[in-house]
Image (cartoon, rainbow, N blue to C red; front, side, top):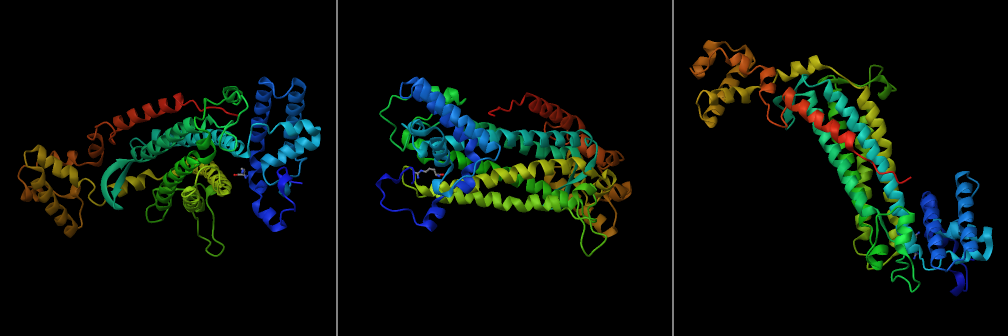
Amino acid sequence: MKLWGGRFSKDTDIWANDFNSSISFDKRLFKHDIAGSTAHARMLNKIGILSDDECSLITNGLLEILTDIKEKKIKFNNDAEDIHMNIEKILIDKIGDTGKKLHTARSRNDQVALDIRMYLREEVSMVIQLLSGLCGTILNIADSGTSAIMPGFTHMQPAQPITLAHHIMAYFEMFRRDTERLMDALKRINIMPLGACALAGTGFPLDRQFVAEELNFNSITANSIDSVSDRDFVIEICADLSIIMMHLSRLCEEIILWNTVQFAFAEQDDAYSTGSSIMPQKKNPDIAELVRGKTGRVYGNLMAILTIMKSLPLAYNKDMQEDKPALFDSIDTVKLCLPVFDSMLGAMSFNKDNMYASAGEGFTNATDLADYLVIKGIPFRTAHEITGKIVSYCIGSEITLDAMNLNEYRKYSTLIENDIYEFISLESCINKRNVAGGPSESSVRQHIKESENFLKNLTIPDYE
Ligand code: ARG
């Protein structure tokens, strides 16, 4: 019989039963469910609802169930619907009637909210850990690339010279914000909902603060209806994970481009490349492509949960059971992508000569030529026009700005002197951009130093 079967006169239809059951996916919450039940039992003991003996019987029983599940000795049952009732039923079978007291002043509605919060704070901490590993890899690349000049692009057209370190440190900032976003989300996850019961709390004199402390929560939820109805903390994490995937996917896209024969800025390690079943010459960037591809499912999961929640009246509705497959998939996907991506990036080599040669093409130093004229007293808009004409001449003559001789330059402006060549060299284009956050070696070194400190001072909470 069902744990809730008292008022029913027949069994659930077998299809309805399977359809209704969530054990196939929520079984992963077993550890948190047992920890929550243990804290609840201790609290019931503290307020006199369970005797000391009853409390030990229940908590020891739960501990044995935990071990049995870990040792794969337990087979969950669709009939018991979800992880909460499976464990309660196993406990009752194990210790008898005392087990039936555990669910006093509790509902699966506050129980599931608790379990997800406990699961999430653990998983989010792991994602933060993985992100910090990736940030470390990026710092290593940056550290060896502060003078590796490459072209910077806008619209995928050569724009201005930058360095590999400057470019890759842009991603450091993105992943740093992703880390901070998750740290911030943890504040909203780490609030204890138990005591809300079905929706309206309980007449029993529960000590919610005690449960919160037992389970290492910072505080308790403030409204019993909100405690069981909302999943905004799930949506927030799915959004944060989507942003991480978007950042990974952009870097993947660049890695794929850099590894083309046409760009040849980088070379993937063989260990992270794949071949073709027909074309013997191929070395494909499958890992980067797959990470880019998996971004789609993480976005999809976010949309799924937003849509599930959008019209639900308060309080709990069964629709909310559907939050878990989506959430779990996003967590799994990000935890799968981050480490393999990190290793792949760390093993990739950069062809700095090709990057340098490419930076010299496409007139990436044209802005600097215009700036030179500005320094000589010409208004920027006029300098822009003169430089445009010079570029047009160079395109026609198939030469770069550096290859123009002084006589040719002076046809466009007599203010141009021999120091122009030094001024528009790629090295000087970079190193004169000494503004904070800019590409000069010293600016990027400063950024690297601050970023190392950020990683060093990052304290990742441990909820295990
Ligand atoms: N398996 C359910 C879920 O994941 C647990 C809560 C069920 N509550 C209920 N009143 N049916 O949402």
